[in-house]
Amino acid sequence: KTQEQKAVKALKYGRPLHIRLSTASPDWSGYCCEGGLPLEVFAAAKWKTQEVWSQVVRPQELDGACFNFDSHFVFVTSDLDLPRVQQHLKGRLPYYDALAIIDIAPDSIH
Image (cartoon, rainbow, N blue to C red):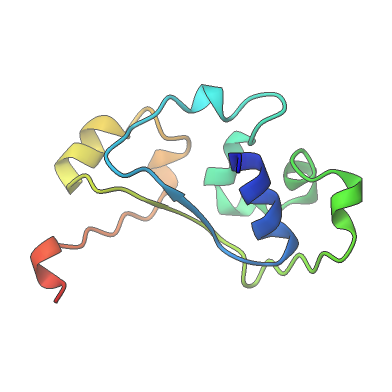
């Protein structure tokens, strides 16, 4: 599935949208462009406005949609440690400075 299809499905059914980066720090210009995801997918308040999400959802995809923005959210995960996240994602991930970063120590998970 393309990122756009995943975003539409998450929006349509009020489900979270998980963007898994693993160890990558991609250039989002290939995904966040005309016909792709808007940059605002990384800015919750902006993403949840009809003006923005309607750039991704076609009118025919509105049939049967629940669009529950109380249960829909976008989260990004990375396998990089915090210093590498700061090094590789700052300046590459849209709205990076507005994101909440949660650093989980791998050895704390049993």
